[in-house]
Length: 315
Ligand SMILES: O=P(O)(O)OC[C@H]1O[C@H](O[C@H]2O[C@H](CO)[C@@H](O)[C@H](O)[C@H]2O)[C@H](O)[C@@H](O)[C@@H]1O
Image (tube, rainbow, N blue to C red; front, side, top):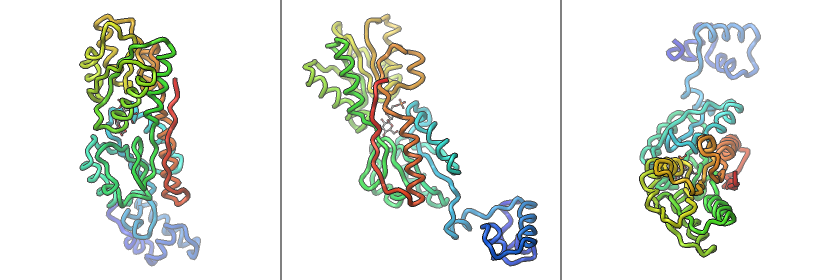
């Protein structure tokens, strides 16, 4: 019933004009107490709420934001979303969740749909293939997470810093044969930046690098870890906790016990299963909070576009 009634119907049922109903709905002055109560009674009786399009035409906000994650099963993205949601709720925003599956086409479709729905803003977990052109009309109402783009607000992780901290720690522990399992360079952040940082550290510490870059999936960690294990290897640096979980299953099955694992993530699952692992916290929780705060400030005209980088820290 709620969706079928229009302001015109409420006006007719209340015996007043449309503009009076509009004033009551917007809590504006110029309406007598008696009329206000009469209109409110009709509104409540019929569970009426003005349509999205009517509100949009009046330039009013629905206080709805969209969060486009890349994968609903990503541990790291979930940690960021977990702090983002309360930050939005606190400010009266209803978040809706969508998934891109790393497809720029799907992001384009989602954004097009959202632009028809009077959405206030979007937090987009960015990835390789997302272009400034694709996001062009969202400049003031979008915050990118995990990736930056010219002319857009973003909250990024310090990929190089995270690897440097881990390499420093492993080197200080006496490891001189540190292998690396990561993600292909087509993925600029988790892939290229983390691997390049590993190679640079190997050069700095005069270590022989040995790496394999299978991808983001746990099974890939399991399937490929053997390729970087030699009789000399004493430590294995994993670009993500998920890869480390896959690798550790392999090590367990093969009863390889004297290898120090290290990874970027510090996710609760990793801490629970492998408290002995050396991890770096890239700041997923902080990133979620900051992205939500930036978006809210931005869409309310209280903040300029900002590029934020969350510092990594040893856990
Ligand atoms: O295995 P996960 O818990 O999913 O963590 C793996 C990495 O996920 C994130 O990076 C990936 O998604 C980003 C969008 O959120 C994308 O920009 C990046 O290219 C992907 O690799 C996260 O940013 C990394 O810190 C995680 O290590």
